[in-house]
Image (tube, rainbow, N blue to C red; front, side, top):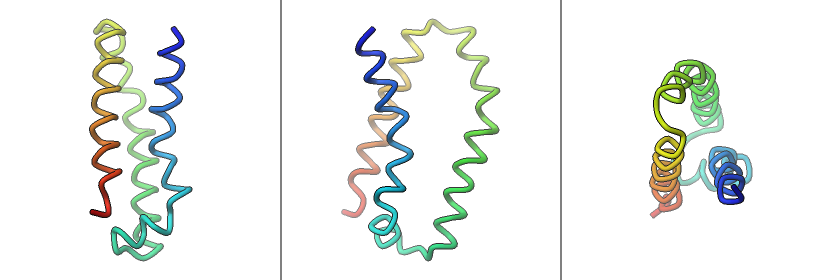
Length: 86
């Protein structure tokens, strides 16, 4: 159960690191503030839209399988995000 608490805190933290590293991320991507803001808005809107359809797999699949998949995919995308800028 403790691993679940730590993994939940970690998985939710990753998308919000953009606020702490806003300027380095802006420099690495080569985007002006407006375009980066549009990307952040798209992240918020897509999260809001896919929140409800995401409930369907959670009702059909076992929780352990979903948690393993979400931790693995978040870890992969986190490593990719961490490698930028190269």
